[in-house]
Image 1: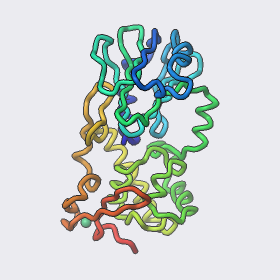
Image 2: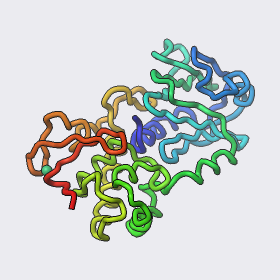
Image 3: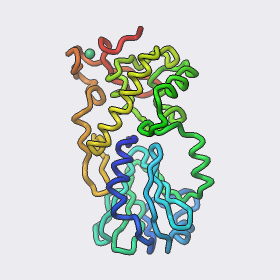
Image 4: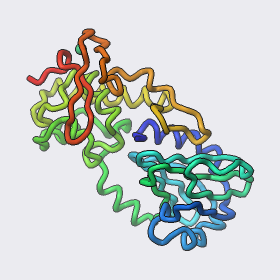
Length: 276
Ligand SMILES: [Zn+2]
């Protein structure tokens, strides 16, 4: 599932293809609900003629801002893909939507699992969403002190708390497991039981794994691609995620452990990440 680095990678690879382009038309595939309950036709009539002025990311959402103040909000969820491609390209596998741009480019959305959405939203919708999202972990206002005070109010398990988008926006299973390994924290520690030193270590690790994920253009295990169809390369940097079956710890050479925390598969080293 795409997390902050993957969505940021899509944003960077998409921007040069769509910013400044005018929408000429919208074609629908076999799943018109991808644009929400209004369906594609009602949305198409609002989209045609608009110019895309910017592509922004917030948490795991992409916003293609339009010249009338509205935005196209894209949530990739599990298997969603957003691709910029010449109009003559054959339909993608599981293509649900194509937004035709004035230079002959199609902005296409494909999604095998159909959990992803491409919604036309107004500034009021964006503000409502913003109220449910914590800080951007790569932004300056995400500080160790701020993280400490958020964690202090949460008695839950550390991993589950870090996955809560209201606390930090953009983290998911991959980068939480990686950040916990690098900060040597057990995923089932009580979030409000960390020392100030441990919180600083965690804060540093969260930023490090996300920065690396962005620098290597995302993690591709199966479906993730950027907006030009290229795979990410960050999978080779992962130290625990995806290595649970028989994998060994890069730090102590012990066998990695696999447990379930808050319903999510979790890989960690029980020697390096102690529960005390
Ligand atoms: Zn270890």
